[in-house]
Length: 309
Image (cartoon, rainbow, N blue to C red; front, top):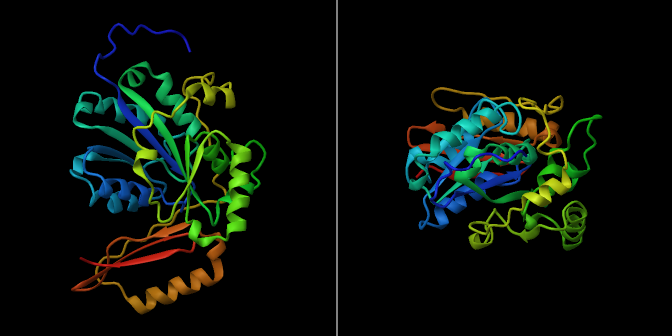
């Protein structure tokens, strides 16, 4: 990168920025919610980048925010390709407000490659002068990550799951309760073959010692460049195109009360016939009756339901 004039660089400490990545259904939103509820000492601004026509994650996270203004949505594309400019503008809008926050967390889509995001943040001098990448934290589902890592992609297409593991400083091996010790050992070996630098932390339901993933200053740009020597050599405006020929998002909005028997029949038939093809399905505020609401979030064959408070 060419040297730039930093005479106008701020003198205040940079605001730490954590990139939370991981494939669809790995537990990223659950981790964000856990962080927001487990600690109250830090005021954290969350940037949600949703893959899908309806932003469910924003609704799942917003109830745990100290202020609704601390949650920013980017739901018209992926932060690593089609809306990288939006990410820069979003962070630019936070420069004057950053003193209000102790940290910023970006939850990427499950299909995001963290490498272009890192390059975007580090190649913009204004952003780099004000924000410090603290860590790249990857959520990996112990039940399904091996299949994602081994998935064969068309020629020239990137395997997002591999990139997410490769560019991470910390890897949270989530849902370890769903695999045997032998399966877990094989998964750890597969991850180590891709990234033997990152610490692998085993967890369930995305619950982890927060001191191991927040305020750790573990990001190393030199390691990223070693993995991808042309990380900063791409032409301005060049965008990586995901191969989404095998991935689609369908959103259904229903006004009024939900017919629970019909909904259960629909979901049962869908899971029976196409469970292997579903990365993640989730719903928020399904009104069953005047006094009862069901929230269900299904991620790769794991269903959770909660009664309305």
